[in-house]
Length: 92
Image 1 (spheres, rainbow, N blue to C red):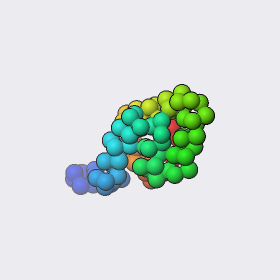
Image 2: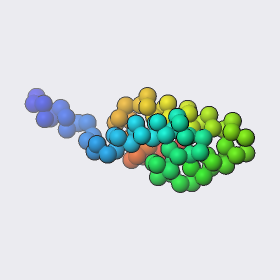
Image 3: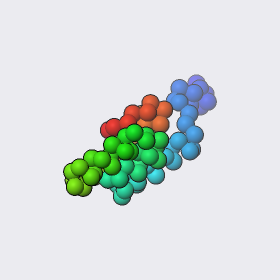
């Protein structure tokens, strides 16, 4: 088997898609309470919900952003892109 045929089985993702993982993860950790990571990934409705959760819980709901940021960073590039960029999964 050639090396080229081995690579064709794995889906190819652009560098822009895989770079979103690091940026979204860091935004989730540092600014996740305000839903910034959601807005960055294009989830406007979920970002607004995150802000409402933060306000209603007096900041305690901000832990959700931290958790999501850590989850983003622990996933492989392919898993992150297929789940959050291509699959458009809004929560966890």
